[in-house]
Length: 176
Image 1 (cartoon, rainbow, N blue to C red):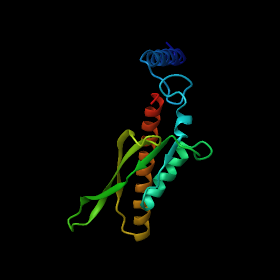
Image 2 (tube, rainbow, N blue to C red):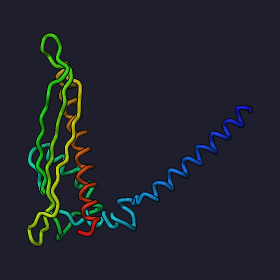
Image 3 (cartoon, rainbow, N blue to C red):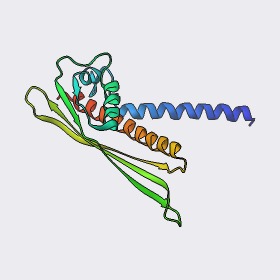
Image 4 (cartoon, helix red, strand yellow):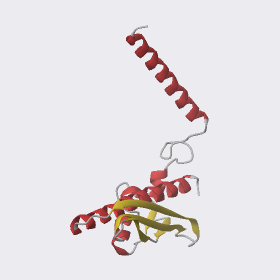
């Protein structure tokens, strides 16, 4: 067999395996979150009906802005059906200590418990917690060190906002 024949066989097998994987995914009941049918039908419209409450501190403001960007397609709701309250706590741990007891690596743990409240009756319809653990290097230069920590917070808040958006959309997509 020539190398071109082997390449043709590989492409055929790859396409066959890909087709098998796609059909297996469809058979398992997979449904897209933002599709027209299924569990997540209309998730974007339902997320648009959620008011996002203020979150204290600078990191809380950043998280709220990320959530606003994800929840609202164009404008904020005039008469929201739900209210999302988020708390935010962060802790830093020093890792990888050297002989002189200075740390060269750190870990940031950000925890964000949240609850979705129905504005009509004040009942909590969904409550959960999102968390993110980000590791980063501790740098000797002051400005570079500040930027590294800020970047770690930004990455953690990005993960948390994605998690909250997905979970709230799934909850609202169930028809609650």
